[in-house]
Length: 119
Figure 1 (spheres, rainbow, N blue to C red):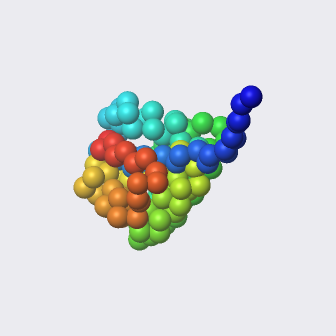
Figure 2: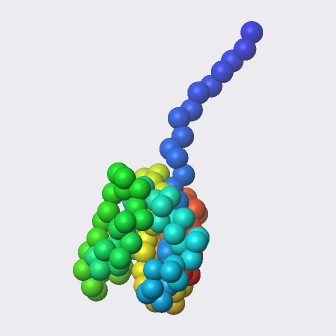
């Protein structure tokens, strides 16, 4: 005799805050490139998305917005990660310094995995 319980768990979401480095493509770090390729959802400023669009896997959902919407992009990225997606939130330069890591970390909680790649 045996008893079995079956539970369906939502996949744990992952948010990678990725800096694109100083601007030249050859200076983009391998880890930043890996996180961009890993993402099923990419969130970022429209002009930054254009810089790395060719690195995305087919089928990656892109959520882009214009200048000045940093906090909204951070909220969107965290919400997508909470829904179980692998999300890359991109920003310029060093993601820990230039705006995106702070609002993303302020919005996130321990229900998702968060990593920051400085670029």
